[in-house]
Amino acid sequence: MPKRTVAARCAIAIATLAAAVTLQPTPAQATAKYGCPYPWVCFMKGPYKSSSAKVVAKYQDVTNYYQKVTPAASGSDWLYNSRNDDRVQLVLEEETNAPFCVRPNSTETWSIKDPSHIMIQTQSACKSS
Image (cartoon, rainbow, N blue to C red; front, top):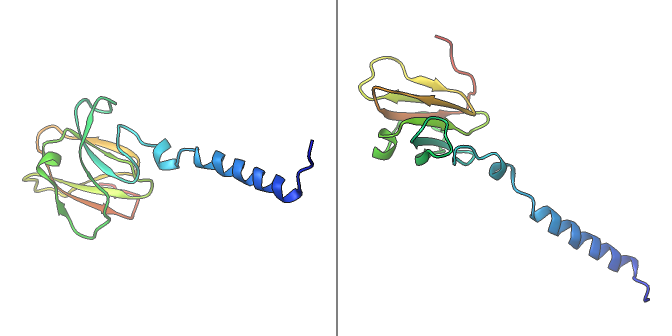
């Protein structure tokens, strides 16, 4: 049996390690919940907190202003914030009160009015009311 050189053994070890590393799922893939991938804020249509609900709109840009949501988001049933550190401020249609806050990695539902505007902020805590 021929002797392998140290360099050849190292090359085989590195190739094996590289193959093993590339087969591992990324944290974002491993933590997707309700079909909503990290780092998105997803508007969902269907049963609350159910894997059968569908993502109908999603947002990921952090802004210092409110974005008007799309018609699909406006007709959604609930929201999932998959972000780890960022909160979401959500305004409902014709709402005269302050927007409500959705903490990181949490959900929110509504029943009477549809969402009209969204703002993703880098703060994680929601102010107490």
